Image (cartoon, rainbow, N blue to C red; front, side):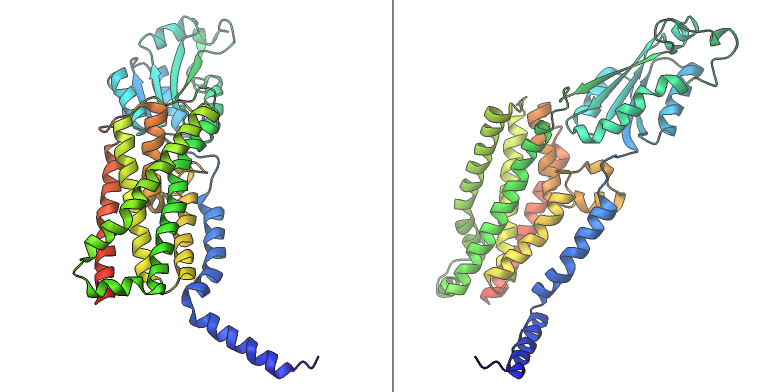
Length: 377
């Protein structure tokens, strides 16, 4: 066989030139490793600190203030709310506004002085076990150092039972046994729908463009919004079917509890499905072929998995990563699904996430219709 080095070099040169011209593929080659390096190096943290905490202090003594100060100095707790009642504490932790709720009883100081071994109640949102593990371990050490500078003189005498001035009782809410599947499996509803609907829609629409089907619409009076609604409605049914299958198997195979919140879950599911399909339609108007559509879908899917709180604790990420994650619809869908299934939250409690999903649908659908109209023109 007669091989020509000059011909091989010519083919190589042609391929490199073509690679540079295909900007999206070039961006994938450079961008994906850089994005993964930055996200895993800076944004991912399995031991989150400065977790939002609410306190209900029913005792205004010095010992109570020392306990609160010790919590803040541990770096695991960021006290943002001072509740006035147990009902307010329940609302804060149910809505996901706080990760921990600390209650100091009214007789705390008196019982510490009497060496009567008082208790402090700490309620933890354990729907994500990875987000609370380190903080709970720090809580167990709290009695040994919180009052070390206050217990002097007569009150410094050895106390009863466990040798500590007080006890910390931790109540893990929503997932008391810290079962990981209770957190991961509901989150699969959002991630699987993202992966299938966005990619499926973008590929299907781009394929029709390549085959010339979309050009046939130029000779019809159909408007861009009508095309979009007609094309995406079947996929809405597919998305609802996928979500129903995932939730049924989550209950049957993994025993994931379903506490209720069906209204919030149904509305959130519909908004998320429509938003994902609209994004896929938008990608199809920008991509020149199916390969580009797949690449653009992957660009969206990667940060959605890493920055949404699906695999890693959301509050463990730095603030810049949390801002990016907050802009992703997957983040809000995760909150709706987990809140509905594990906490039984209603529409009122899930309203911030539902509002974010509705805003995403309005923006993406509007841009998609505009881009499609431009493509037809």
